[in-house]
Image (cartoon, rainbow, N blue to C red; front, side):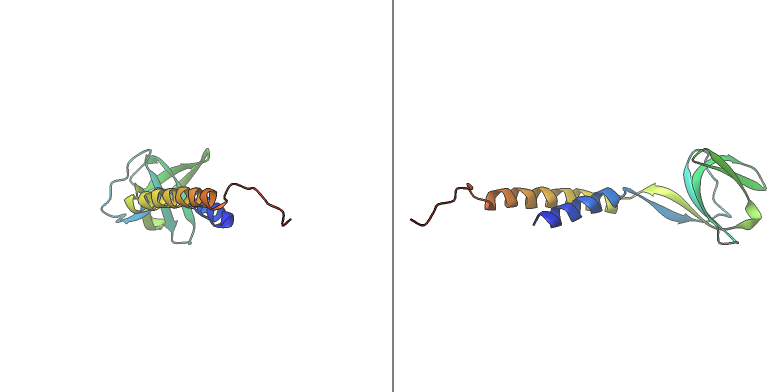
Length: 117
């Protein structure tokens, strides 16, 4: 029973309340300091916050490194958004782990061992 609780706790750590949603790069106005995931025509996937936007390039900041991407090379753009489904899943994981932990404690008994005399 304890391994199940550990697995659920590990899944909770890996889950995120955010996900990336596809946006139309031609009609979308990029917002500075929002997180994006951009896929280029060379199949490079770059995540980061928008640092600045020009007519011909976008500059992303990821871990202190600035990356300039020409707008003509962008193939796919995804914007980071809050996910209610992932958040509710995380809450269910927590509730299930607490329930299993409490039922595990109740099933242990008082711990006394009697000898067969």
